[in-house]
Length: 123
Image (cartoon, rainbow, N blue to C red; front, side, top):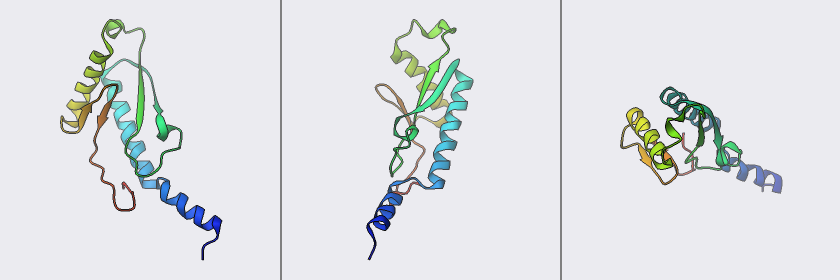
């Protein structure tokens, strides 16, 4: 029979991302950041949400990245946020394809074709 501590450790391990899942997420978010940096004048970008706070549990479904445009580039200052988001969407469609990219109300989702197994693993 498991002790309470052993049972908790086992439960916790089923919620935490394994190393391969962490490596995949890191690689993908880095790729997206580097690509968008070639398309826009980005002042800063950073992770946000549960992944950034290390509170993400399985299955890993998303990694949130926030982009801050360079304030010295005024071409986007006069545009509606939906237009800026549309331009980001178009750039991501060019790289990942229309089937993988979905513009949402305030964000853009890229589906990398990750599948979740019966144990909530995404690797």
